Image 1 (cartoon, rainbow, N blue to C red):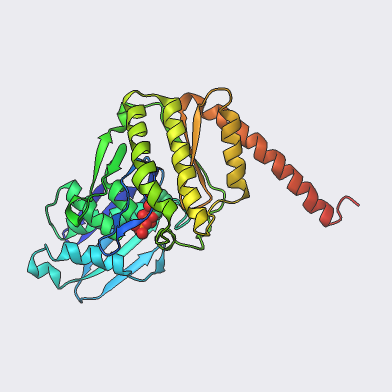
Image 2 (cartoon, protein in one colour; image 1 turned 90 degrees about the vertical axis):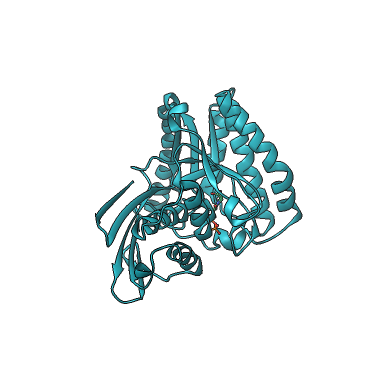
Amino acid sequence: SFSETSQSQITVRAPTNIALIKYWGKQDKYFNLPLNSSISLTVDITKFFTETTINFLPTPEIIFYLNNKKAKITNRIQQVINTIKIQAEPKLRHKGLCIISNNNFPTAAGMASSASGLAALTFALAKLYQINLTMEELSAIARLGSGSASRSLFGGLVKWEKGEKHENSTSKNLYEKTYWPELRLLVVVLDSRKKKVSSTDAMMRKSDLLMKRSCEVVPENIKSLEFAFMNKDFPKLCEVVMAESDSLHEVINESGVDYLNENSYRMKAMVNFFNMPTVRSAYTFDAGPNVWILIKKSEVNNFLSLILNHFLIQYDKLDLEENFDQGRFK
Ligand code: 2P0
């Protein structure tokens, strides 16, 4: 969604997305081409989004504020700006930019802030410089900024085809969100701090397991997920989603990084418990400890009761221990 207040200012909101089939590993670093295709669900734009406002400046500098703090223009952001600017009218190319970007959720904590951020930036720049590109073309440019951003330009279930060059590594919508209206995504924020190892760095660690994942495991999982979606087979969908998340974290762990924390493992155990005897939810983790739960609307309250009870009991215990430490019960 976007609003234009004048020709020299634009405000855009882009939602985040959560990968069910994960992007991990690059075939080309400069163009940010992935090792494998990926599939995601775009999150409701009113819930988790980046809002970006861009103004032209009379002088040629670029000023960037991220979450109310002055931030660095990374090479990747610069690449997005350059790719769009070069297609603009010459009179606009010499102007500077003031970019103000805010996330309404934790930044760089494995909640896909780069996805919504770079999608918003790409769309806003294209509007500001008045260049006419299809959404697929825009998704290729957003990809230069951050791989997962390529998917955030679309709603519903979105597939990013890995492609083999800049022009055909693009995303497209597979199903609108109205196709399966019972689907819900819950997020449990277990740690909102910025992660220690960025996914961009972690995914550069090549291994046999990563190659096996991208060549064999992912293509099979994509087939199963598309089949489950076509048949609206929820248990099957959940099984693929959990297998995908486990496969990703197996590769990540092998490279010496573990993004999950103790509570992430507790959440996995709770989903497994909830899924007995029939599968009715799925966990999925990105490059962070926070868990996303795929579930049907009718089951949301049942699941929330389970986790609230569990964490309340944990919390009670902690509280007692703290009070003991402080000698209050002596
Ligand atoms: C995904 N992730 O498909 C996967 C799953 C994390 C785990 O895309 O280097 O920030 O900017 O292209 O998009 C996170 O990686 O990486 C990511 P870059 P990005 O959503």
